[in-house]
Amino acid sequence: MKYFWIIGLLVMISTAGCDTSRDFTVVEEDQLTNVTIALAPSFQTPELKVVVELLYLDAKGKQVPFDPPIRDQFVLVPKATKFSTLRVPIGENRIIEVRGYEYGDLVLEGHQEFPYVGNQPISADITLDPIGIPLLIIDTPKSAFSPGEEVPVEIKVKNVENLFGVVVELDYTRSRLFALNVEAKSLNSDEDSPFSKSLMPLVHDLNLDPDPGRVAIAMTLTKGQDSITVGSKSQTLAVATFRAVKPGAAEIKVRLIRGVSPKLIDPDGQPLQSLDQTQKYLNPADGRTPRGVIKIEIE
Image (cartoon, rainbow, N blue to C red; front, top):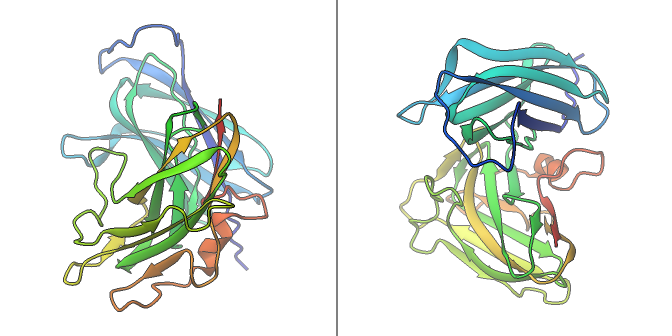
């Protein structure tokens, strides 16, 4: 019998021979640097075959493998950190792609793009998501902010078809954060939210429940627009912006209300998919990396 155990992996990347205090300098494309990747299961798992590969974006924005391929593969055993070092050409638009296989089947995947890999250290926290399961994810570009700084929270989806609307509520630490705004946009200047061209992209209530701190967000396409399909690469639907108020630990999370929030809607106004599987990953109790919880420090 085949068993699928979903895990989260922390992928940390660093380049060799770097000095973080140096000025950023561009190095010739044909020079190589060491990229070390540390993979650590977030909780007990069976053995998992992992393939790590470095790719790059070509002039048309297409992901292209190096020739010869730059990849490593190994079996990741429970509660053991695996270090893998690859020799990578220095240059722009590098991508690390990680795939996890059980019994020969691809069950997990994750990737991250890097504007530049070269003579300064880089790091990444890549969580491998299950293949084919519709997911709603919240994310922020960093984990530490200063008082007065804006805290952007991206609301993302992946592995969904025929998506027309989304409803989600966010709870946040009201004593340390202040809700500012919600916009149908992406933090990536090269991408845009599929809701941005809707005549009524979103409706929000920044003060839904002021005591615990709760934001309600509903976004929809306009009648006549084509519904949305998002594959294995997550796409940002909207950005909720908060203000960091005072130092300390803060949390932003998706409020789980079965059948109400979160909710994905098709063009007929019906629930797009059962989110029972998605709920397991938003705020799991078994050690999986949460996809619906952000923990930050204000310092």
